Length: 351
Image 1: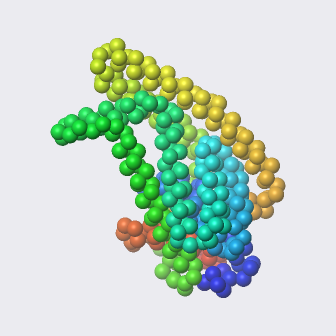
Image 2: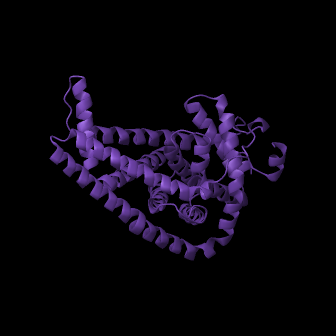
Image 3: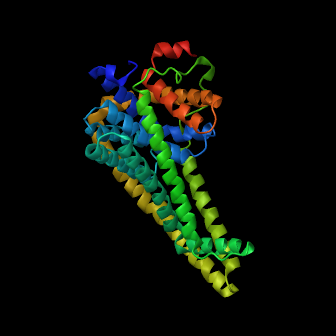
């Protein structure tokens, strides 16, 4: 496909955008499962970060045609609905938010480190805030009261007094995602620089062969859905027990438990039985109407997903030669490089 962005023809740019869109779709529909199989830490941050990098690279390859970001996002959402039909609707909202934000920022400020950093940090903060809101929906104010009590109890053991400890927890949590956003922006900016260089350091070699035991997670998504439900139920019981123990007397304790259980059970039932399925079906129906318009692109993306699964396994295995942030940098850079330069001939040579 050429070694530098400046040497790419129009046809090569179109092909590059298609490959990057496929990698973005794989990020949303399969990368999380593969990362769990490979025991890669910080999966949530990395999946969201990969989406930011793909949006930035697509904007670069598409030139001034920023609408390509929205087109690629539509293809990604269609593939996501097909490959992972049980995906909860907040995941669709996150992808749409990232695409619309990238489109707006790159139109206003062009593609540079500042606009990429804004996209990355805002996308990561949206992801973090979304999780906080969902936790609040499931457990209500009981979660934050319990957290305040727990932190106050721990602080008291060290001779300190801490009030509103939950604010500190939320603040630290948001700071972690904010720091992750800047790290991802750095990765995205360096990925753009690599596209303008003849760097052969990120070429995957035969000794990083694919793990044939890895599978796309579509077969395990429904099982994972029930696993999340059991985690919520377990958390609800633990929270209730803590509130009971921390109560001033048994009467207040039982009232706190009843309030927590009734709120959590109602929220879980409304979310999993009513809101979740209705919104997901509505989104999937909307995407099905768009599917015929992007039929060829969707088929091309679906056919490339197994290739990306193997490239991801090889990139992660080969990244073991590096440590710390260098490993993440190599993983992202080599996976992107392999995605853009993959051919059937190169596949035969490295297997």
